[in-house]
Amino acid sequence: MPGKNIKNCTDQQKHMENPLATIGILLIFAGIIFLIISAAQSTDIKSGGGAVIFIGPIPIALGTDRKWALTALITGIVIYLLFIIYRNKIY
Image (cartoon, rainbow, N blue to C red):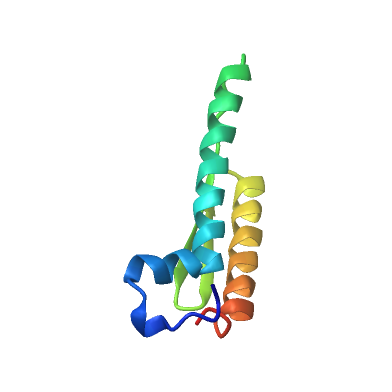
């Protein structure tokens, strides 16, 4: 509950009240489910992927091709903007 006294909470309770932590956990589970579903439905094998590395506030996108690098860059920018929006609202 947002009105609880944080000094009386355990660390686990503090993290469970954090909406970004909850969103992150849900996104991880959704990604795992999407991987399982896509692996079960796939008949042709094409692989690709991307990653985002944050150095300070700057997202650096990596990808196996231009599409994945652009997707990773957009994802990194969205994550950065969410951090800016929610950084003062957590506690």
